[in-house]
Amino acid sequence: MIKEIKDDSLLPKICNLENDLFNNDKYNKKQFDEMLHNCKYKIFAYVNTELLGYIIIYDNIDYYEVFKIGVNKNYQNNGIGSQLINFVKNLDYVNKLYLEVNSTNLVAINFYKKNGFRQNGLRKNYYGQGEDGVLMEWSSDF
Ligand SMILES: CC(C)(COP(=O)(O)OP(=O)(O)OC[C@H]1O[C@@H](n2cnc3c(N)ncnc32)[C@H](O)[C@@H]1OP(=O)(O)O)[C@@H](O)C(=O)NCCC(=O)NCCS
Image 1 (tube, rainbow, N blue to C red):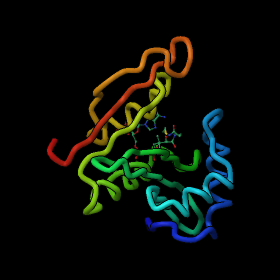
Image 2: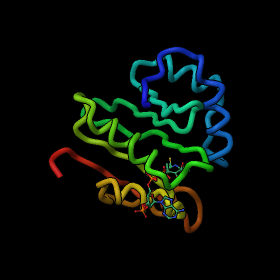
Image 3: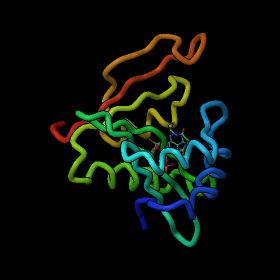
């Protein structure tokens, strides 16, 4: 089941998952708490008997940005990430999604392509030497 997070009860679990999945650009409990109370951010969680994944989108006025997406390592490649993306695509206020991903994160790039995203730009060496920022977009018009 995918549900929007509206209180802080699941934040510690989201934080743990974030810590497990990301090395550098990870957010802490305080930052998640700030997102929760900032109406520009929306946090959705995939919950089975436990938290298996989450997606955060950010309202950039004329489009939404996929700010973060993560799935528990033991449950990856089972369609959970795609369900989270599809859930967000189907929200009536979402017509366009933009994101940036490290060019070395081939799993994520494959994942986004499989889910209908197209590359629309490149920030050379954005994450360091040889690590570009790949800009991608999805539109309901595609
Ligand atoms: C990216 C991520 C969210 C995908 O979630 P997921 O639940 O595993 O994805 P799905 O099962 O819905 O999609 C599977 C597709 O993703 C890609 N993929 C997933 N795991 C893969 C792997 N180990 N190797 C290559 N491609 C992979 C493939 O395109 C795959 O499609 P296919 O099965 O037809 O080949 C997940 O891998 C993850 O949490 N990664 C770590 C965090 C991260 O990098 N987030 C994105 C940057 S913010």
